[in-house]
Length: 264
Image (cartoon, rainbow, N blue to C red):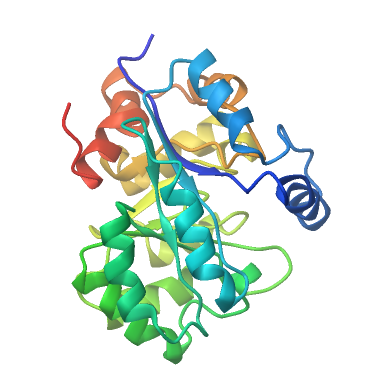
């Protein structure tokens, strides 16, 4: 039994749109979902599996959604629920919204380049990244895609070389299905964390262990990517990787506590 578990990568949608949003995910990725996208489902799973902290993300696919989504996620925050904000490439008031994001108690920014329609290293995004870095907020970046190259590790490396002080959580162990490129371009960078969501379930345990150790277990975070997965099964998959107890504790909670400046 682990001392604590933090799910660093879970999504929740407003009840009015949750099922439609989850269906869209299912159709795009072709992966059976573990939930319907509603917050209550992942909250119940959190309680049943004694998850210590849950980090919730939602992504604005249109500029007009930015403030609505940030308000929604902020409304979910409790001592055990942590929220990340969202921004959009075409949202002109991002500097003021970053101030508001901090005031709302949101702890980072989530981007999904594919669903938001931009390439990670698009030059128009650099001023936004720089402003996020000034605020000291980490970015959780969707990485990898079977249908396009908008979210490749190579593109993220270009941004990291251009923007100083930026901390990025590269989701899906650095890039779903693009792990060799992730090893080449972003593994080993001190300002990069990886998360395990939508990755370890598609890898052989030995391959997952090799990837985690290649980057460093002290900079990897556990995540379910709900509604794609829930905690019981994802923790069972994690256990099969065979990390040492010390490595597992780092991935499951210690790294998240350090990154988010949480008190033990």
